Amino acid sequence: MTGINKAACIGGGVIGGGWIARFLLAGIDVDVFDPHPEAGRIVGEVIANAEKAYAMLTGAPLPPRGRLTFCKTLEEAVAGADWIQESVPERLDLKRGVLTQIDAAARPDALIGSSTSGLLPTDLQRDMKHPERLFVAHPYNPVYLLPLVEIVGGEKTSAATIKAAMERLAPIGMKGVHIAKEIEAFVGDRLLEALWREALWLIHDDICTVETLDDVIRYSFGLRWAQMGLFQTYRIAGGEAGMRHFLAQFGPCLAWPWTKLTDVVDLDDALIEKIGQQSDEQAAGLSIRELERIRDENLVGILQALKGGDGGKGWGAGKLLKDFEQSLWAAGGGTTASFDPSKPLRLVETKVSPAWVDYNGHMTEHRYLQVFGDTSDALLRLIGVDFAYVEAGQSYYTVETHIRHLGEAKLGQAIHSTCQILSVDEKRLHVFHTLHDTATGEALATAEHMLLHVDSKAGKAAPAPAGVLDKAKAIARAHAELAAPEGVGRHVGERR
Image 1 (cartoon, rainbow, N blue to C red):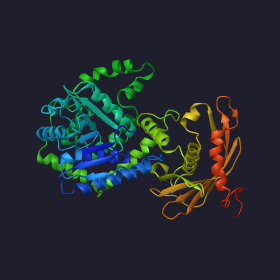
Image 2 (image 1 turned 90 degrees about the horizontal axis):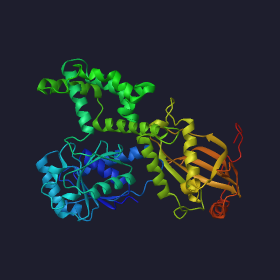
Image 3 (image 1 turned 45 degrees about the vertical axis):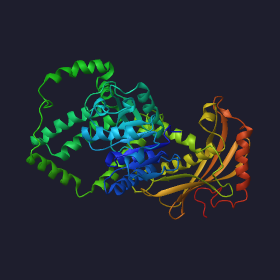
Image 4 (image 1 turned 135 degrees about the vertical axis):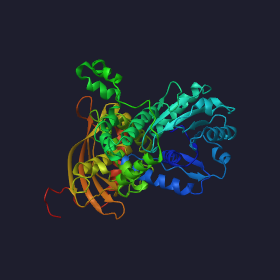
């Protein structure tokens, strides 16, 4: 599915650990070499955070987690790898030496990416015997959630390498952007450096504190940037006349002496202490790991919101997530072979996302319907009603639903759903879903649905084809041996 059967990660720090988690959760085996004595602990903590984030991010069926192996030598780690990601400290001599060592030990057709945030790939590939396969693959932290990777080739990097790297990122939920010319710091860090330099001057000159500066970003243009970037945001600012009007109106201010972008602030001990003290106060005692978890929960919420943008088609990074989920569903839900039809089908495993929680601290009402809808979708895929089936013009539509709320689902709680088919005929599918607390098995909610098979092009009910009916009826026959679920056919307010 991915085009990457085995990955090797050289370096397991913040960025290297993020790459490891991204690969593992995509079902890819990863061999790691990092001589740091606590590499195992550090990588383990990153993976734990990544798993928590993915549980909130998507209910799509992730592939079985890849196998993680820590190797004693670099040569052992890269042997047989399809993609090798170097993430050692940002020193040219160190990276060049490590990459040359990787080049000598790796398979001739292996791709070699460097996580450098600013060094030129031409300089990195200087001593390699196969420099054509080296490229910069510059990600953003946390690598397991932020999908962007800047792909930059050097003078000796082949076009085939760039093409292969771009193609292999999409199946693991990442978006490669090809930077046409190599420059120091590429594109993202160039922009960040300009903002960072101006921010340091604002603190140095006591214009504001670090907390005020962060508030200015996160309560204003940071929210716009998250979904539209810079140029599309300014296009809207130009009104109906668009970008040309914006540039004509605001272009002259670029000549005004507002910024200090060409001046470098002196990061002396006094400024470092000022920033450090203000940063400590801003953190309010939260540890780095706690801040990472808060960051991840917020990012998941933003990605989930963007997934519903543009009328449900998805927008920006949300559309990428939506497409990634569709590929996961397509790969993970087409057969009954892994299910036991002699009991209710366990179809959806997830956790209560921060984006799902209401003012009571519980999962809000419409999210229950979302999980039950996902359960119906999983069942439909199981009987052959997949994306291709829907695109061909037929589907099942839900025409009646009855939900009972029996317990409380809270933030971060692991939950799963089961489905029992009550009856099926040519046009109708009658199902009963139950939402459970995974830890205790307690029933938190139930949903009884009637689904109608339709010809979506004609806009009317139509008999389901024999292949779909056969699969549905096979499960229904097995489920007929089960006791009727408590709550079937209940009316609103009816006593148990």
